Image 1 (cartoon, helix red, strand yellow):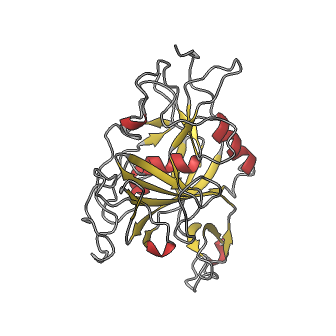
Image 2: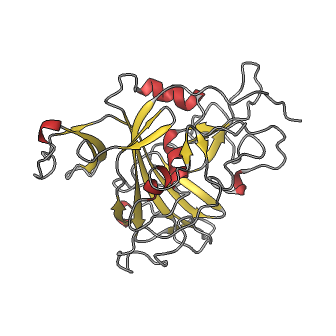
Image 3: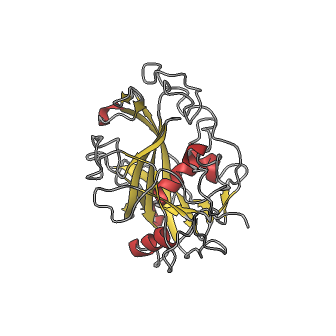
Length: 322
C-alpha cells in the first residue's frame, strides 16, 4: 500500500523568467521500430515557425511583453534563437538584424523541442532546438536525443513519496528513478493537460500537484490550446480569452483539441489536413511540434540559474485544488 504524505502542496518559491513558445511545422515525419510516427531527426525537415510574443512569468502570473521591449530573434548566421531586449533609445528603428533597436541577448536558461505524436506515444521531447541541429533516437546520452515524457517522484524528509509529479528529461546517468505515470491519483489536470495514459489507477496516494522542468510544463500547457486565426497556441493558453493557468491553478478542463497553425502552408509541406487536431488522435496522423525557449528575467536580479533550479526541484507549477 502506498504511504501518503498529508497536507497541502509544497510552497512555491518566488521567481520570474521570460519565455516564448513557437509553433513549428515539419515537411515529413519518421517512423519508429513499430511503424509509428515520430518527429524527424533531420533538421532540414523542419519547414516553418510561427513565433509567439515574449511572455513573463512572475509569481504565478503571466503577462505579454511589448515587442518594442523584448523579441525572439534568430542569428542569421547560426540560426540560434534567443530572446532579446531592445534598447529603449532606438526602439523605433527598423533596420536589419542585429542592429534593429540595438538588440541585447538575454541569457537562455533552457531550450526544448516538444512534439505531440499519437495516443500510444503522446509526448516526446529533446532539450535543444531540433530545427537547427540534427537529432537522434536511442539512449539519452546528450541534448540531441529524443526522450519520452517521464516523471520523478520527490520524497519527503522521511523518505515517503509526496504525491507531487515532476516532469523531467531522462538522462543516461540519472541517479533517481523516473516513471511513465504521475505520482498521485485523481490529478485535477487530467485529461485537460495530460491524457489518462499517464495515470496509474493502482496508485492510492492523492496527487499533490505537477512540477519539474519549466520548459516541459509550459509546452504541455501550450498543447492544450488550438492556434486561432494564425495566432500561436501560446497566446490562447496564456493571454487571450479565459486564462487557463493563473496563480498556479490549472483552470482548463477540456481535453486538447483545435485547428492547425499553418493555414497558408503549401500542401506539399504537410501531408495531413491543415485543420487536423493539434494533439493527434491517430497513429497515422502527423506529429505536432513546438519550440520552448526560457530565459532569465533581466529586470529581476533574483532571476538566476540557481533560482530556476530550486523552483524546478522544490516548487509546484500546477497545484491541486483543495
